[in-house]
Image (cartoon, rainbow, N blue to C red; front, side, top):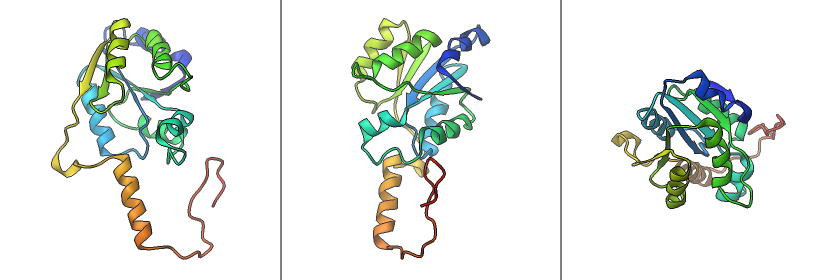
Length: 186
């Protein structure tokens, strides 16, 4: 398991010339069992799993100004620590050309065999076309998990936390309640 820089992405193919390389991307905020199951599914399609973690600026664009909950460095480190993941890297910020442009750059460097997305990923037709143009097999995974994991998602975790906070308002005791990206206590 290793965190890569974009410039090192092309080396993965040289390091593993006889292995099938699988590529996926996402936000992966508040890493949970659903993410781990997705990575296990991805890994079943090949030998080496490379995961791209979305940049904070893009997450805010697509999920709202309060997201991500965890910054890109924390999310990247969490993904790096998961067993099925061989390599991960921070995604390039999405420009006005849209999501596919940064992916194109990464796929051209990595030359993966397989690109995996969840069935609820946005714009699957564009991803399908992108995979075809780049000679990469697209695999659309159905979300399937054991009953004890049903309903787990980052959004559901956030909603549950919001409900708990609304039910039990905390008194301002002056005690710190969190740490910002810069390490400041608030």
